[in-house]
View 1: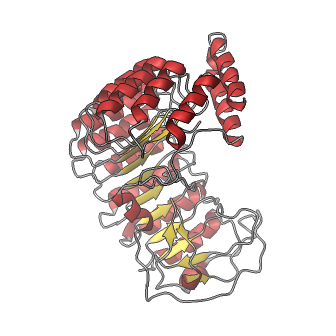
View 2: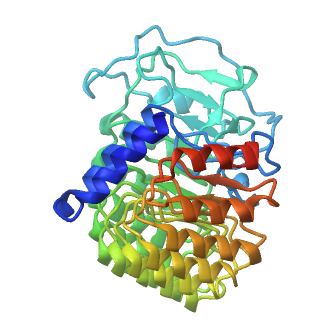
View 3: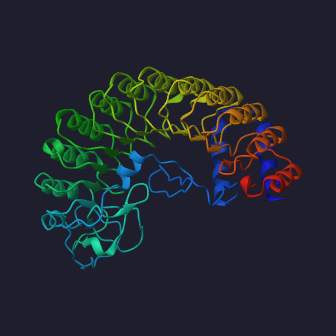
Length: 467
């Protein structure tokens, strides 16, 4: 009954979309989050053989695919580091929004931990709860961005208040210049800003140790991105393989600078630029870097939540076609308005590309034409494991084409089609193919399937196809 209610809502929105075309994206966005908050959706087998971990920062999800190289970057630090010091003193100051001028300088954190290799200033992990600056060893295990706490290997530094700004960042970085052990620096969800980032970039000009830098949600704009790009170009000994500027304010100018640095970079494997202000010119510059750098080791590129549109997607697709040496496994382009033209270009690249494992094209105004092109590519491609087409405008024609492709393609194990416009015929075609795919994960919630058909599919496929 609940599914019928929400399917009716979506059908109503579809009927009047011609009158509300300028607001179509907003309407689908609202529907998506209403459904998410009500926890409505299809699931997958809990005992699926392949564990999938989220590539979105700060979110744990057991259905996303990770490559061995990504696991190494996020959590591949080994346990039993002999350089760990133990200090159980906790900060006595409550976690609150504290201005830069009142926050206590954190030099002491690094001064007392010259032999430590991990520094974590994550304001986001427990908002509203007492927190300390944790300086720990690489023995910590992580989900997608932060190392999980291990009480035996934590140094809780004394007298450090919760949210640091650019003034405190500069103090920290003065110590970073002389610290010879720090390999992991997480400053996510603070107030570092451009000033702090410029200071950080300066401190890294002679650094050859740091390999993981997370600056997500720090109000960083083009100036900060340009400073980091300059350091990547200047310091040939910099060993940085993970850089996150997720949810900042980086635009095309900053992205172009980062792309220029990537043209000669051989070290960076993970670049998170999702939820910024990147447009077509920024995406095109990144595509050029992917195209011309035959030694680029980039494994993971996150561009979701920007405005690269179909032209940016076409440029990226061309790079995937041209550079056969590119080792890109994960490409996230969710919520970028790439439309059918962008999907068709990427489909053409998939026919040639032999490295992509996960492709996220959700929330991109893709219709049947784009889905049919991707289905054709899946008949040829033998490497893609996960394809996300959720929250688009795909109907029966697209779903039937994808079902036909799945008869041939046995490599794809995760297909997300939730919140589209698929009706009975498309759902039935997909269900028929998946009868003999016990470990396949299909997300299919909130389409336009009749209630009686839904019940038949539930009985027929049981837990393989949960509605």
